[in-house]
Amino acid sequence: MTNHPTAFVVDDHAAIRKGLTLLLSSVAINVRTFPSAEQFLDHHSPKHPGCLILDVRMTGMSGLELQHELQQRDSHIPIIMISGHADIPMAVQAVKHGALEFLEKPIREQLLLDALRRAFSCDTQRRANALRLAGIRDRLATLTPRERQVLTLVVDGKANKVIATDLGVSQKTVEFHRAHIMRKMRAPSLADLVRQVSQLAHPRLNKPAPSLQMSLA
Image (cartoon, rainbow, N blue to C red; front, side, top):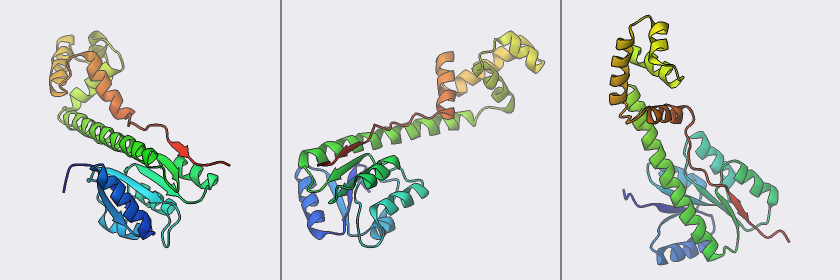
């Protein structure tokens, strides 16, 4: 499996799949096409970086239904919705549920390529953020129960003397635990330690504002 991002095209029109394959291949973008949502689900792996170019109206499972199914499977692949119908309520629903873009057919090539670059960037940043959070969790798991207690109080902004009183230990013991915490968490400063813990409580996944590219005439 390649680590290069792939544009996964799901559309039940063969001509659309062929046209998008030619366009994306011409600019050196990996592309895989599927004639149905069901076939895409059979082959999809969240481990494969990329984005999904998804037709809204298809025979069988619709694009919106596939979007919902991916959410149920906890798949965060960026989705670019495409449609041959200027259906504003449908576009709003797709974007409300996380679609990055909604493009109307016939698709303007530059709009699609710009959307793809944005989607690939979003996916890359999300994966990097997920790895960073996983690293923090792994380091946190190495702390002893007492170190976790001290960490909680440190993050709450309490001084060593106060922590010592709260835990019924000496201030020197607290300083000992803090030194171990900083080393295990690989935190060069108190600010970095607090930042790591805050990221676990409020993970900031990069989610650019979606856009609608539709004719409203």
